[in-house]
Figure 1: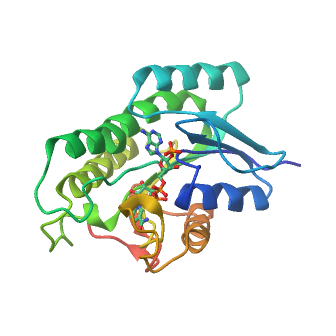
Figure 2: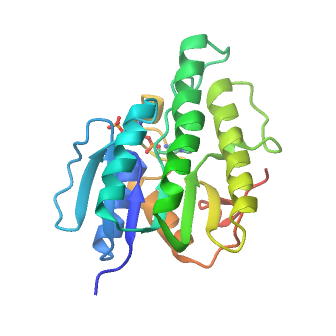
Length: 223
Ligand SMILES: NC(=O)c1ccc[n+]([C@@H]2O[C@H](COP(=O)([O-])OP(=O)(O)OC[C@H]3O[C@@H](n4cnc5c(N)ncnc54)[C@H](OP(=O)(O)O)[C@@H]3O)[C@@H](O)[C@H]2O)c1
Protein backbone atom coordinates (compact mmCIF):
# COMPACT_ATOMS: atom_id res chain seq x y z
CA UNK A 1 0.00 0.00 0.00
CA UNK A 2 1.32 3.46 -0.91
CA UNK A 3 2.20 5.86 1.87
CA UNK A 4 0.83 9.37 2.08
CA UNK A 5 1.19 12.24 -0.37
CA UNK A 6 4.01 14.68 0.33
CA UNK A 7 4.33 18.15 -1.18
CA UNK A 8 7.81 19.68 -1.24
CA UNK A 9 8.44 23.15 -2.64
CA UNK A 10 11.79 24.01 -4.20
CA UNK A 11 12.57 20.41 -5.15
CA UNK A 12 14.73 21.14 -8.21
CA UNK A 13 18.01 21.22 -6.30
CA UNK A 14 19.65 21.35 -2.89
CA UNK A 15 17.79 20.25 0.22
CA UNK A 16 14.38 20.05 -1.48
CA UNK A 17 15.58 17.67 -4.19
CA UNK A 18 17.36 15.47 -1.65
CA UNK A 19 14.18 15.41 0.43
CA UNK A 20 12.06 14.44 -2.56
CA UNK A 21 14.43 11.60 -3.41
CA UNK A 22 14.48 10.38 0.18
CA UNK A 23 10.69 10.38 0.55
CA UNK A 24 10.39 8.53 -2.77
CA UNK A 25 12.92 5.94 -1.57
CA UNK A 26 10.70 5.49 1.51
CA UNK A 27 7.70 4.76 -0.75
CA UNK A 28 5.88 8.08 -0.33
CA UNK A 29 4.15 9.74 -3.27
CA UNK A 30 5.80 13.07 -3.84
CA UNK A 31 4.82 16.26 -5.62
CA UNK A 32 7.82 18.56 -6.01
CA UNK A 33 7.83 22.10 -7.31
CA UNK A 34 10.20 24.40 -9.14
CA UNK A 35 9.58 27.59 -11.08
CA UNK A 36 10.02 25.88 -14.44
CA UNK A 37 8.13 22.74 -13.49
CA UNK A 38 11.13 20.69 -14.58
CA UNK A 39 12.86 18.56 -11.97
CA UNK A 40 15.47 15.92 -12.77
CA UNK A 41 13.85 13.12 -10.81
CA UNK A 42 12.51 10.11 -12.64
CA UNK A 43 10.30 7.97 -10.43
CA UNK A 44 6.78 6.57 -10.93
CA UNK A 45 5.60 8.14 -7.64
CA UNK A 46 6.98 11.59 -8.43
CA UNK A 47 5.26 14.49 -10.07
CA UNK A 48 6.96 17.79 -10.85
CA UNK A 49 4.80 20.89 -10.93
CA UNK A 50 5.46 24.55 -11.71
CA UNK A 51 5.25 27.06 -8.87
CA UNK A 52 6.69 30.54 -8.61
CA UNK A 53 6.11 31.90 -5.12
CA UNK A 54 6.57 35.48 -6.31
CA UNK A 55 3.57 35.19 -8.66
CA UNK A 56 0.09 35.06 -7.14
CA UNK A 57 -1.23 33.75 -10.47
CA UNK A 58 1.22 30.85 -10.24
CA UNK A 59 -0.02 30.00 -6.74
CA UNK A 60 -3.63 30.16 -7.97
CA UNK A 61 -2.90 27.95 -10.98
CA UNK A 62 -1.06 25.46 -8.79
CA UNK A 63 -3.96 25.38 -6.34
CA UNK A 64 -6.46 24.77 -9.14
CA UNK A 65 -4.37 21.86 -10.45
CA UNK A 66 -4.17 20.32 -6.98
CA UNK A 67 -7.93 20.81 -6.47
CA UNK A 68 -8.65 18.92 -9.69
CA UNK A 69 -6.72 15.90 -8.38
CA UNK A 70 -8.78 15.68 -5.19
CA UNK A 71 -5.92 14.16 -3.20
CA UNK A 72 -4.90 15.37 0.25
CA UNK A 73 -1.33 15.89 1.39
CA UNK A 74 -0.28 14.31 4.65
CA UNK A 75 2.83 16.45 4.67
CA UNK A 76 3.69 19.87 3.27
CA UNK A 77 7.33 20.95 3.39
CA UNK A 78 7.69 24.64 2.56
CA UNK A 79 11.34 24.36 1.57
CA UNK A 80 11.71 26.85 -1.31
CA UNK A 81 13.71 29.86 -0.27
CA UNK A 82 16.32 32.29 -1.50
CA UNK A 83 19.14 34.29 0.05
CA UNK A 84 20.36 36.92 -2.43
CA UNK A 85 21.72 39.11 0.38
CA UNK A 86 23.50 36.29 2.24
CA UNK A 87 26.90 37.56 3.40
CA UNK A 88 26.19 41.19 2.58
CA UNK A 89 26.39 43.81 5.30
CA UNK A 90 23.97 46.53 4.21
CA UNK A 91 20.38 46.00 3.01
CA UNK A 92 19.75 46.74 -0.66
CA UNK A 93 16.26 47.27 -2.03
CA UNK A 94 16.17 44.77 -4.90
CA UNK A 95 17.44 41.76 -2.95
CA UNK A 96 15.32 42.81 0.05
CA UNK A 97 12.15 42.74 -2.06
CA UNK A 98 13.11 39.47 -3.75
CA UNK A 99 13.79 37.82 -0.41
CA UNK A 100 10.53 38.91 1.18
CA UNK A 101 8.54 38.04 -1.96
CA UNK A 102 9.72 34.43 -1.84
CA UNK A 103 10.53 33.69 1.81
CA UNK A 104 7.64 35.57 3.40
CA UNK A 105 4.80 36.67 1.12
CA UNK A 106 5.06 33.66 -1.18
CA UNK A 107 5.30 31.21 1.74
CA UNK A 108 2.27 32.72 3.46
CA UNK A 109 -0.06 32.86 0.49
CA UNK A 110 1.03 29.49 -0.85
CA UNK A 111 0.44 27.90 2.54
CA UNK A 112 -2.96 29.56 2.83
CA UNK A 113 -3.89 28.13 -0.58
CA UNK A 114 -2.76 24.64 0.46
CA UNK A 115 -4.54 24.43 3.82
CA UNK A 116 -7.69 22.97 2.33
CA UNK A 117 -5.62 20.33 0.54
CA UNK A 118 -4.03 18.99 3.71
CA UNK A 119 -5.24 15.72 5.19
CA UNK A 120 -6.68 15.72 8.71
CA UNK A 121 -3.71 15.58 11.15
CA UNK A 122 -1.29 16.57 8.39
CA UNK A 123 2.19 17.82 9.21
CA UNK A 124 3.29 21.24 7.97
CA UNK A 125 7.00 22.05 8.00
CA UNK A 126 8.54 25.42 7.24
CA UNK A 127 12.22 25.29 6.35
CA UNK A 128 13.60 28.29 8.19
CA UNK A 129 17.11 28.93 9.48
CA UNK A 130 18.81 29.58 12.77
CA UNK A 131 19.84 32.83 11.06
CA UNK A 132 16.25 33.88 11.80
CA UNK A 133 16.67 33.36 15.53
CA UNK A 134 16.52 36.70 17.37
CA UNK A 135 17.97 35.28 20.56
CA UNK A 136 20.96 33.67 18.80
CA UNK A 137 21.76 36.58 16.50
CA UNK A 138 25.26 37.95 16.99
CA UNK A 139 25.81 38.89 13.32
CA UNK A 140 25.17 42.07 11.39
CA UNK A 141 25.01 40.53 7.91
CA UNK A 142 22.23 39.20 5.62
CA UNK A 143 19.55 41.56 6.88
CA UNK A 144 16.75 40.54 4.51
CA UNK A 145 17.45 36.81 4.79
CA UNK A 146 17.59 36.84 8.59
CA UNK A 147 14.46 38.98 8.90
CA UNK A 148 12.58 36.84 6.37
CA UNK A 149 13.22 33.69 8.39
CA UNK A 150 12.21 35.45 11.62
CA UNK A 151 8.96 36.39 9.88
CA UNK A 152 8.48 32.82 8.68
CA UNK A 153 8.93 31.64 12.26
CA UNK A 154 6.22 34.03 13.41
CA UNK A 155 3.89 32.73 10.70
CA UNK A 156 4.63 29.22 11.94
CA UNK A 157 3.56 30.25 15.45
CA UNK A 158 0.39 31.85 14.15
CA UNK A 159 -0.48 28.73 12.14
CA UNK A 160 0.16 26.60 15.20
CA UNK A 161 -2.32 28.65 17.23
CA UNK A 162 -4.87 28.60 14.41
CA UNK A 163 -4.68 24.87 13.78
CA UNK A 164 -4.14 23.66 17.35
CA UNK A 165 -5.42 20.11 17.69
CA UNK A 166 -5.57 19.74 13.91
CA UNK A 167 -2.17 19.95 12.19
CA UNK A 168 1.31 19.24 13.58
CA UNK A 169 3.43 22.24 12.64
CA UNK A 170 7.12 23.10 12.96
CA UNK A 171 9.74 25.47 11.66
CA UNK A 172 13.25 24.09 11.35
CA UNK A 173 16.90 24.80 10.75
CA UNK A 174 18.25 22.27 8.22
CA UNK A 175 21.93 22.65 9.13
CA UNK A 176 24.60 24.45 7.10
CA UNK A 177 24.25 22.66 3.79
CA UNK A 178 26.34 22.68 0.61
CA UNK A 179 23.82 24.09 -1.89
CA UNK A 180 23.65 26.95 -4.36
CA UNK A 181 21.73 29.28 -2.04
CA UNK A 182 24.79 31.34 -1.14
CA UNK A 183 26.37 31.10 -4.59
CA UNK A 184 29.11 28.76 -3.32
CA UNK A 185 28.03 25.15 -2.99
CA UNK A 186 31.41 24.03 -1.63
CA UNK A 187 30.75 25.64 1.75
CA UNK A 188 28.69 23.94 4.44
CA UNK A 189 28.90 21.13 6.97
CA UNK A 190 26.45 18.80 5.26
CA UNK A 191 25.62 17.41 1.86
CA UNK A 192 21.96 17.96 0.93
CA UNK A 193 21.35 14.22 1.40
CA UNK A 194 22.65 14.40 4.98
CA UNK A 195 20.41 17.35 5.79
CA UNK A 196 17.44 15.60 4.17
CA UNK A 197 18.05 12.51 6.31
CA UNK A 198 18.03 14.63 9.50
CA UNK A 199 14.87 16.44 8.38
CA UNK A 200 13.21 13.13 7.50
CA UNK A 201 13.87 11.72 10.99
CA UNK A 202 12.44 14.85 12.59
CA UNK A 203 9.39 14.98 10.34
CA UNK A 204 8.60 11.31 11.01
CA UNK A 205 8.90 11.80 14.77
CA UNK A 206 6.01 12.79 17.00
CA UNK A 207 7.36 16.32 17.48
CA UNK A 208 5.64 18.94 19.60
CA UNK A 209 3.57 21.23 17.41
CA UNK A 210 4.75 24.81 17.18
CA UNK A 211 8.40 23.98 17.74
CA UNK A 212 11.46 25.70 16.17
CA UNK A 213 13.81 22.74 15.69
CA UNK A 214 17.48 22.54 14.77
CA UNK A 215 17.92 19.17 13.02
CA UNK A 216 21.70 19.56 13.18
CA UNK A 217 21.83 19.56 16.99
CA UNK A 218 18.58 17.60 17.30
CA UNK A 219 17.33 20.14 19.80
CA UNK A 220 14.98 23.11 20.00
CA UNK A 221 16.27 26.35 18.54
CA UNK A 222 15.97 29.62 20.48
CA UNK A 223 13.39 31.92 18.92
N1 LIG B 1 21.78 25.62 2.52
C1 LIG B 1 21.81 26.00 3.78
O1 LIG B 1 22.89 25.96 4.45
C2 LIG B 1 20.56 26.45 4.47
C3 LIG B 1 20.65 26.82 5.82
C4 LIG B 1 19.50 27.24 6.47
C5 LIG B 1 18.30 27.25 5.79
N2 LIG B 1 18.23 26.90 4.48
C6 LIG B 1 16.92 26.93 3.81
O2 LIG B 1 16.68 25.71 3.16
C7 LIG B 1 15.79 25.90 2.06
C8 LIG B 1 16.35 25.24 0.82
O3 LIG B 1 17.54 25.90 0.51
P1 LIG B 1 18.74 25.27 -0.35
O4 LIG B 1 19.97 25.60 0.38
O5 LIG B 1 18.43 23.85 -0.70
O6 LIG B 1 18.67 26.23 -1.62
P2 LIG B 1 18.76 25.99 -3.21
O7 LIG B 1 19.62 24.80 -3.50
O8 LIG B 1 19.13 27.29 -3.78
O9 LIG B 1 17.27 25.61 -3.59
C9 LIG B 1 16.24 26.55 -3.50
C10 LIG B 1 14.98 26.01 -4.12
O10 LIG B 1 13.98 27.06 -4.06
C11 LIG B 1 13.37 27.18 -5.34
N3 LIG B 1 12.96 28.56 -5.63
C12 LIG B 1 13.76 29.64 -5.79
N4 LIG B 1 13.01 30.71 -6.08
C13 LIG B 1 11.73 30.31 -6.10
C14 LIG B 1 10.48 30.97 -6.34
N5 LIG B 1 10.41 32.27 -6.67
N6 LIG B 1 9.35 30.24 -6.27
C15 LIG B 1 9.39 28.92 -5.97
N7 LIG B 1 10.52 28.23 -5.73
C16 LIG B 1 11.68 28.94 -5.80
C17 LIG B 1 14.43 26.72 -6.33
O11 LIG B 1 13.80 26.21 -7.49
P3 LIG B 1 13.95 26.85 -8.98
O12 LIG B 1 15.09 27.84 -8.93
O13 LIG B 1 14.23 25.66 -9.84
O14 LIG B 1 12.64 27.47 -9.22
C18 LIG B 1 15.14 25.60 -5.57
O15 LIG B 1 14.53 24.37 -5.81
C19 LIG B 1 15.62 27.41 1.93
O16 LIG B 1 14.40 27.82 2.51
C20 LIG B 1 16.79 27.97 2.73
O17 LIG B 1 16.54 29.26 3.23
C21 LIG B 1 19.34 26.50 3.80
